[in-house]
Length: 187
Image 1 (cartoon, rainbow, N blue to C red):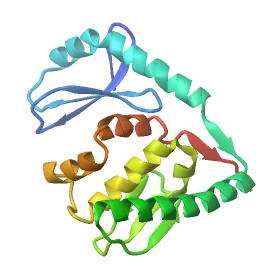
Image 2 (image 1 turned 60 degrees about the vertical axis):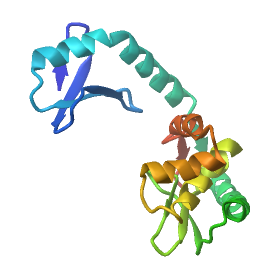
Image 3 (image 1 turned 90 degrees about the horizontal axis):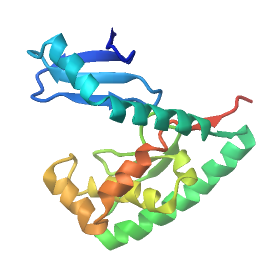
Image 4 (image 1 turned 120 degrees about the vertical axis):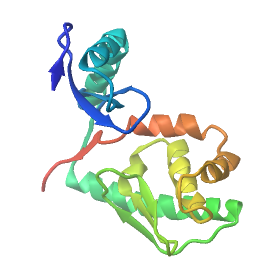
């Protein structure tokens, strides 16, 4: 961890990348990703140039934590049940519209994913989708069904998603705001 004059702690992650980027994580911590050859001085300047942006994102992280949804185990079970029905309906509707098939649908509690598609066409969805706006549920379902045609995230894949949801980029960005914001109390 490094610190600049403005007291921003940040982690430096060097790799084969060509550009520098700053990431403010959900917990407010800051990472600077940069090429192997960039000096510490350049990184420090880069962070200082983006201090306003960093502070704004850190404040948003604090506000999101304050808005965190906490459910009792009974509430969580009810939402899981609702998710089964909602995702079965949405998947069937979008699959018809997109002209694709799928295998089994499984509802899980996934820590880092909203959904996934296996090579066999089985779909996994996070039950917490029952707590997000319906337009974001549609995005996740379309995203996973698009994998029935392209099992990757190539430009061709994103074209399939965009054909169904021209505003998918905005939906994808909104969905990130809900990650890790839903907690379930222990029994």
